[in-house]
Image (cartoon, rainbow, N blue to C red; front, side, top):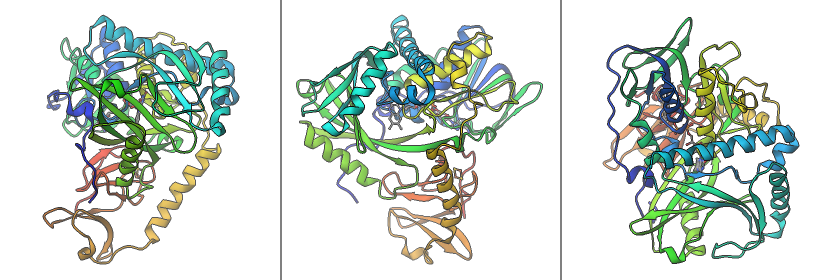
Amino acid sequence: MSNLTGKHISYWIDSTPTANFPVLSHNLSVDVAIVGAGIAGITAAILLKRAGKTVAVIESQQISTGVSGHTTAKITSLHQLIYADLIKNHGEEKARIYAQSNQAALEFVVKTITEEQIDCDFSRQSAYTFAETEENLQDIEKEVEAALKLGLPASFVRETSLPFPIAGAIKFDNQAQFHSRKYLLHLIQQIPGDGSYVFENTRVQKVEEDNSCQVITDQGIVQAQNIIIATNIPIADEGLFFAKTYPKRSYIVGAKISADKAPQGMYIGSGEKYYSIRTTPYEGELLLLVGGGGHKVGAVEDTEEKYLDLENYTRSRFDVESFKYRWSTQDFVSFDKLPYIGKLTPLSQRTYVATGFSLWGMTKGTLSGMILADTILGIKNPAADLYDATRATPFVNPQGIKQNIEVGTHWIGDRLKGWGKNLNDVGIGEGKLVTVDGDKVAAYRDETGNIHAVSAVCPHLGCVVAWNSGEKSWDCPCHGSRFSCTGEILHGPTVKDLKKF
Ligand SMILES: Cc1cc2nc3c(=O)[nH]c(=O)nc-3n(C[C@H](O)[C@H](O)[C@H](O)COP(=O)(O)OP(=O)(O)OC[C@H]3O[C@@H](n4cnc5c(N)ncnc54)[C@H](O)[C@@H]3O)c2cc1C
Ligand code: FES
């Protein structure tokens, strides 16, 4: 096993209490049922409740322990490099709506924190995307030009407080950072009461829309006038969002650093291999968070390497004391760079989704809550058309075609590849794909030597899962479903565990 140090848990989760909302125990009826308690679901819930609607937030695990509990939690409209591309591919008007709506989401979070005096380690910060070499500088310069054209608070800088030289950076003023889970735990406390509810540990299996809507869970049924599916990637297969996005997994380490040695601001690099950098208050000093190592879910088995690379990078660039945390998570990347926010399908009247935040969901998840609440309340949101979830998006752009060919290749190829024949070949702490009496088995041997054998076939659409050594999980390379080493769901789109043998 590796030399990795520090706790293997998200700092945001480790530093906050669990919420302890009840499990759904009887059928009930509300105006709006919201599936998933991450930033998208909770923002929608709070806005709808404030507007007088009754809501039920239904969460399969605990509040904000999904992607929103594992994020880097920068709140910014500087999404690495996007505006030059948006102008080129969607035109200036749409790019401006993207810019303005993400700025509006940022200001919504700031206003909420200020008005409600939420204690969530919030601070205004500048956001930077930097190029370390002259080679990537052109992209930065183009981005500055595009961002200024759209009225964003952008400038070009050659100096930052990073302790290493850069060729240049785009800087956005007046952006922000926070402790995402402290913020969301504060908001969710306002939901229960006056006909509204929050349920944890209640997995939604299916949603149905007829004259009214039904959310069918493993514990009971919630009837509603409208449903919002805010499960990061919709659990409903209609709409094919799993084929219009791809799941990207990425890694974060947290190292203690003294304030006088820490950089000011929030940073992300550019080019092929890049790192994301910010700090947060920690034990009277700071925790330096460094993220990176992104790859498609299920494409890398030795994910411990990703943490080692982050530790090496952090040590080589910063004067850190010790590593305190490491964790990883994933988000769904939209092929046309715009999130999907709106109706599940063109035929849906009352079922809405929000997905495809492309690793920038602190603003886009907030924005989703704002747009979906407006839509349900009959208010025209100026950004709703741009993000229309039923827009014609191409599986036909090159990225989409490649992803969907890869899915087909996995579906067929994984059935043919070399499978182990003997469970004895599975070492302690290892996971391996093995054929046993004709069954395709995903086998994990725990530290006490016991084998945990589950079906290797993903219950979503039948691809074969792959071992992830760093997280000790089974990850599906097709659409990003993940399962624990003993087969329980960690991440959708699946709603079923791996079958146990
Ligand atoms: C490594 C990394 C770093 C990031 N850093 C940033 C950043 O600095 N700034 C930024 O803007 N964005 C960042 N992002 C992106 C951002 O964190 C996400 O886009 C955002 O948190 C997604 O929110 P969500 O509400 O869609 O999903 P989640 O927070 O995952 O919420 C969905 C919830 O639905 C629940 N659920 C799933 N299935 C069911 C079911 N069947 N029944 C009931 N509940 C269910 C899940 O348990 C989960 O709690 C980052 C992403 C990654 C991967
Ligand atoms: S996530 Fe779709 S087949 Fe596994």
